[in-house]
Length: 202
Ligand SMILES: [Zn+2]
Picture 1: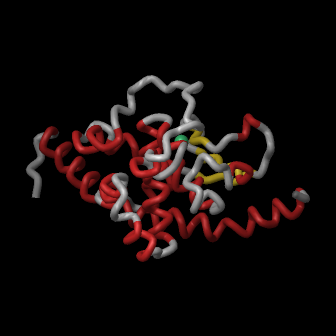
Picture 2 (picture 1 turned 180 degrees about the vertical axis):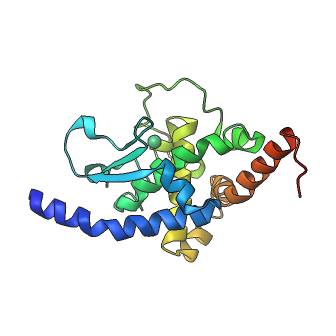
Picture 3 (picture 1 turned 120 degrees about the vertical axis):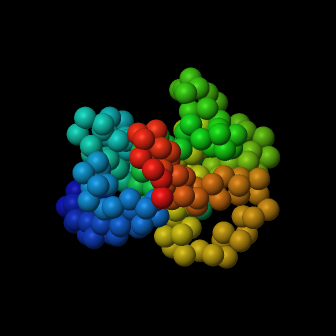
């Protein structure tokens, strides 16, 4: 793609990024300014391997490389949306709030499990799509969480209620429902902390 076209389209995405951040904050029940202190989104379009989409913990920058959009390991129905990548990476950020929850572990597994970079997930049995939203989700509990988070949020973001209904027969639907309960889980966790700190919960 012509670089000037890329730059123009990235500028054009800025208001949409703000919309997404507002949407996510509302979804998880976190004030926008608190979230913005933690995360700044930077959109790039580069073919370099070093420009993967990732969160840089030192700078609090969430790097999204548009070139990764459309990768066929992601949920094939949504991978064409760059917003899907943003939701996937933001999903990783919220993992810390839920990963120790017993229900999370039951549904997604233990995120402390070794990350096997060489794990083959290309030749999966057909039945994997009953249990996972995408091929990449089979790689590791963290990726399962991020992929399910991205799928759950993009369905909400684009208001696809019929699509959501059509997923009800899938085994992974319980994981999507779990994502939809994240606001309550975070709230409950905050209350648990208050109790630990000796404050009376309301
Ligand atoms: Zn990921």
